[in-house]
Image (cartoon, rainbow, N blue to C red; front, side):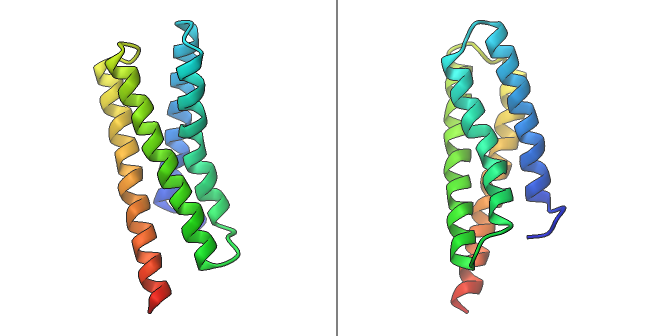
Amino acid sequence: MKKNSPLRDKSYLFAIKIVELTRELQNMKEFVLSRQVLRSGTSVGALIREAEFAQSKADFIHKMSISLKEANETDYWLNLLFDTDYLAEIKFDQLSKQCNELIAMLVSTIKTTKANLNS
């Protein structure tokens, strides 16, 4: 994976937004959901970074697949926060869009790597 890849950069910026969201949630005295979204939302980028030093293509695919699972979980928490009125619609739309872009990029990366692995 390239040092300054769009996936790496977008996942890092998303993690920053998730940390900011967590601060806001904790100021509202919401600690349980804030910890959940913080854990999954920051794991996406951490796993992408970890995949940069994968031991093999199979290991790379595995780490990216876990990152995809974390992104999907983050989408769940964002929806739950929105539906329970902890997250305003504008902020939800922005974070959900970023999360879904990451999901699409991860799916594409995994599919491309698998295709190259089999060829």
